[in-house]
Image (cartoon, rainbow, N blue to C red; front, side):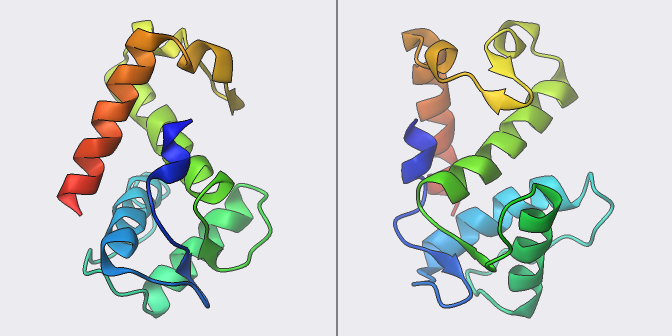
Amino acid sequence: MIARTLIKGSVGQGGANDATDVRVVQRLLNYWLVPSGLPRLTINGVAGPATLAAITSFQRATAMTPSGRIEPGAGIEALFNRHLFHLVDSIGLSVISEYVDKSKASREALADPAVGDAVRKYIDALRRLA
């Protein structure tokens, strides 16, 4: 899925920490933090202590190995999918929810050209916001 390419390098403990990638991760973490009742991160492109703590908290909450780092690939995909699931729930998009299994993204359904195109446009918008 294209979400795997949302960031170019790793973000967090020992990561490349490109400012644009850090802002993308901070924004996605905020979409998880706020509904979880945790404090929002400042989106500043700096992988400081609050960002590292949020990454580790997210990893623990989602049964990932708590490395303190989000990698391109499965790491960013897990974070993006959590955001996408929250988005679908919060605005009740039943059409999209047919394509999303809440326990795991259905790769076959998300490969549907119409859904895939919408997700790609959304990911491009997230990158531009960073």
